[in-house]
Image 1 (cartoon, helix red, strand yellow):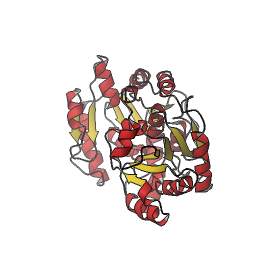
Image 2 (cartoon, rainbow, N blue to C red; image 1 turned 120 degrees about the vertical axis):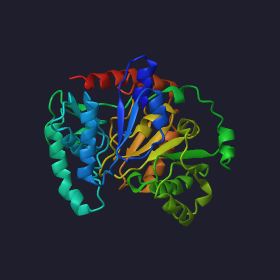
Image 3 (cartoon, one colour; image 1 turned 90 degrees about the horizontal axis):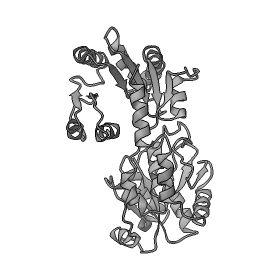
Image 4 (cartoon, helix red, strand yellow; image 1 turned 90 degrees about the vertical axis):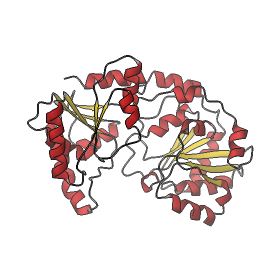
Length: 357
């Protein structure tokens, strides 16, 4: 959607159709249509894989598309099967994470389907795209990269929400019932096991032993929310934790924090970590696990990368070390973004290039 909006902003003509596997309206449908895109919802749930593929094949035959750009990681092999015999000019698979999830609740079926779906995708796709080097190599499953066919394509990130933020640290803290001089450790993202949000509570407890002004703010929601509150109570830091839920103004929240923490488990690694780039644009010091790849780090990044095997005290020590260094510059980060592959013009130009034979 960012790329579509930017293309229209630049006056580029686009003819994009979004084929939605969920088969129901989405939050961005109206925005997509206003930008000239077409929305097609699958008439068949993706759980009925054969029927889903037949329905997609019928749409491809009717629409006579020049490019099929599948974003469903390993499951994209199913989409490629639907293109067989169709007059599609270019078939792309775009992988966005290294979790290698197959859509079935059965662990046995996941294990059985994972490699066949990978092989189908590698055999039928004209290009394999990924959002990081790690994600690409994970999808290739040990196979050597093919020149011009296996490509890292980074997300384009709009810097506008970070440029002109009015920062009022006191007002922000008072709105959350925090002390005016509170130092905010921010966890921004889904509160799910693969992000390891509960570990941030342990880090807070260790951090408060060194810096009593430290507090922990969560901007996000998910299944682990229920585990955060009792863990905070058990460690005696419940009064220093705030759960904000999903926020549509995450750049604003980030700009009022002091640290950003992402203690993702190290296996599997994060695909890319868009929030890591955003945290840099907001001027945050970052505490990252070894489950975060290097790709989203700008040259201006202020961070420490730690193993999860190191205890929370080591993470707290790293936070204090970062706090004693000069604060990272938002202006320098924005300038670095403009020179990076995440620049909107650069990313759109690369995407347009990938959509040509």
